[in-house]
Length: 222
Image 1 (cartoon, rainbow, N blue to C red):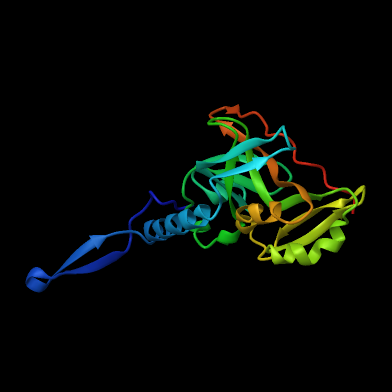
Image 2: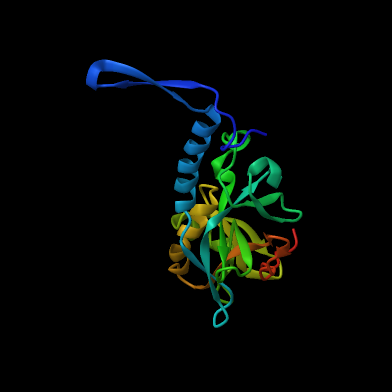
């Protein structure tokens, strides 16, 4: 697959104003596409918050966005980037370090997510866009659909074993929006706990693998 650093083929013409002469510059459509994708990729990843809090009250950890990694769904590492960095087995997610090549330049940016770590070089986690919300005991999550909608979320699944808790996600369907609106969820009446779901990622360090991230909260049946 042709990548950003490979072949130069097309010729671009630029008018130099002094003297009105033309100058030919050899460039590559692959390089142009990759540059454009880098810009779009940065804009996409900037939509994710720099830091998120994951865990139960009193035992939470702050996960910080890794500036050198991103996750993409629906393509193996070889098709996504020249520098594959890891994977989430069984989830169709691949981690990458470098900007993708031409084959991925038209990829759906909505399928790309930021990657988070608890510390530099530490465990890796990828947000799913799902957020666990637990209301006070006796408050049925099902009855809070309107309040959730007002905060920009929709109810995905009520936990069968805990009807006061539910998985929700941003109404836009964008995982970035699910994370940026966590403060609105925490401000809702009777909300006791809000936690974004992270998938454990297998990150590669040369030939070594990073330690796995803590397992995400279990989803209820159904």
